[in-house]
Structure formats: C-alpha cells, structure tokens
Length: 476
Figure (cartoon, rainbow, N blue to C red):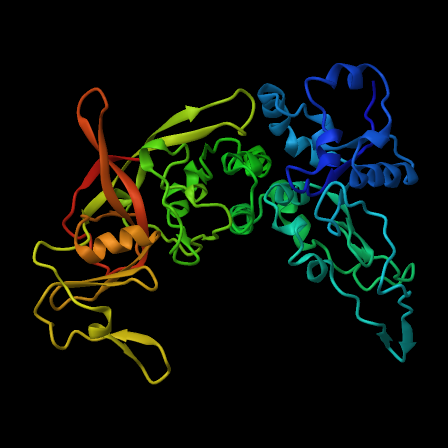
C-alpha cells in the first residue's frame, strides 16, 4: 500500500461528562466493530463530524482523530500511539486546529458575526494599502484550545495547518501565512518565512537554535492545563522525539537533556507558588529537579545565559541517570527518578548567620531599582527571606550578597523559621541549585547523599564556591 494523504484534528475534548464526546470514543467494547466495518459518523460529536466534512471537501479520504483512532482506556494502545504523535502530526497533509470551539460537541460550522468582508488592497504610487488583518496569534490568544497542553505539540509538529477561528480561517506553513479573504496573489502575509508555529519544526530540521526553540516549547507548555497531571511528560514527548531525531546522541532526562544538563537545571518558577500544594518527594514520579514537577499551569522560566563555571574541573558533571519507567521505541512513559552528579557544594548560610527582616536591608535607588545596604551589620553574617516573593538573601561579612529564588511557599516559610538547612550546588558562574537533604543511597562502594530541589539562584558572588571540592551526590 502506498502513502496516503490524511488530515489530523487538533481540538478540545470538553468536559468529561459530555455525552456526545463519550459516545464518540473508540473503546474496547466497540473497537472490533469499528475496525471491521464502516460506522455512521452520527456516532461522533459535532466537531469531529465537521472536521470529517472539511477533509472530504478538500478531496481527502482520511482523518486522524485521537479519541477515535486510539482505544480509550487501553493503556498499551495509548502508549503505542502516544509514541507516534510526532509522526502522526508531522506527516499529516495538514492539521485542522479547532480554535473556535472548546469541546468536541460544539461543532465547527456556525454563522459568523464579524469580518465577513474581502480585503481588497489598492496601489498608491509605490505603496500598497490594505485593511490590516488580525493575526492568527491575536485571535487564538486566550482560547481554550491554546491553553490545552496537548495542542502545543499537535501545532508545532505540523508542517501545514488550517486554523479554524470564530471569524475566519488561516492557512499556515513554513513558507507563508494566509488569511481567508485576502485577494489571491496579494497576500499581506506571504513574506513570513517561518511563522512562530513552524519555528520549532524548522529548527528540528536544520538544528539552528534548536535548544532555544526547545526552551520556547517548555515555557509555553508549562503555562497550559492538563486534565490528567500524569500526562505532563507524555504530552510533550512528541516534541522531545523530534528534538532527539536531530541530536541522536543526546539523552532525554525528564524534560531536560544530558548535553545541556547544567543549563537545563537552572530553570525557575515565573511566579512564587503561594497557594500550591508541594509534591511529596518520595511519591513523585517526576523528580524535583525537573520543570515538569511543577503543578500544571504554573510557568517555568528557562535560563538562557548559562556560561559554565569557567573552569572545566568545576563544571557540573552528570555521572549517571536512573530511569524509573522506560518503554521501547518512545519517550511517552520514559522518565528518570534520580541522577548522580558531581559538582562543588557548600551551605547557603554560614554557621554564624542570623536572620534579619528583608525591609532592614532593602532600599530603593533613585531609578526605582532594589538595592541592599548592610550598614548596620556589615561585620555580621545575616540572611533575609522575602515571603511575598519567595526570595532568600545570604550575606557574609564584607562580601557581596547572594540571592536565591525559592519554588514553594512552604520552603520559604521553613527558611524564615530556620528549620531547614539549605545546600547549594554550583551549575555555572552565576547559577546554583538550592537543595535539601532527603535520603541517601548506597552505590556499591559508598553511601551517596541524596538531595531534592527547593529553588535556584541566578545571582551569587563570584567566589562563593572558592576552596570547595567537588562531591558526588544524587538528585531526586
């Protein structure tokens, strides 16, 4: 059988109690019947029916829809198909992105209320004038579709997309971005070489700025929602597979990469997690050092200016990784519970540090920037915790202060109360992890100290680790 053109559908399922959506799913009970003979599309919810009709209208006979093509409730089939997502969307003739609806039962075809006009450009001397067309990004921003975690890889793995928005359709590919209603031959968007939607796909083919594009994906992904939190890594595994296709000698480590591991470890939370229940280290499938350990919808900010330690013997070394789940041929169920690393460590605070209030040392300069003054304690070792922002400051007599960013309010509270001992692991010249001891492990020759992440620092003094030897530890 030769290659067959097909479309793929990217859409929102809606609420779990949606009767149409539940009735349209392929399950173990109806799989044999659906697989062996045709079945009426009236069994399917309206959005899927409309996508089928759109596919037919384009002269294509096949469409891929996850709830129909994957046996729902069958873990083995789900795992097989999840590991093929990068192929399903990358090989589609085009992907239908159902931006206009927030459920499978809503349907695509509705009367439009606005923008039912053609854009007719006109020539004025050497200039061309036309009505400004709203960009697809402006229209989908804030939509339920764009807030769903799974749609990130469905969009960014697709080489060609039709965005079905409430007002109009948009066509997007690596060569152009065209709006419904634009006069043929006078598109205002054809100069776009690589629209944002295809930038990762372009980078995965050329390798140019691929790691930067991966960071773009992670930052967008962590803003999004998931119905099932355990889908965190599977929902971005297609992007990871595409990344690995170009960098085949790299190793995927729970959302991070071996070749850039120290740099990848330096992520931080974009906002202080005040009201969020912190995951329990021992029971968590995703390790604390991965951005994927954050609760869904809480964005991570990746560190993009990592320059190493400046000395090879002081560079963080990844010694060994410990996979806790591994499947054959894919990344959907592959994660890593712990890693053994070697690097310089020291306590955040000296034995003589005493706490002062943040307001005692924080001052504002004329330009509004926050500065610190230790005029009343210049000869002392002190620390401060800003509970409103999750910041911790460590000052040692007559030296420059170091500032860390704590992930969870519970740990900031413990640091304020002095009930937790924080260790620092050097990542680079200006990056270090803030760690807490959690368990030890025997590696055959010695007991390795175990640690979990509680925060990160992007701002510490240059001699902070001077005189400290490298040690081998395990990060959980």
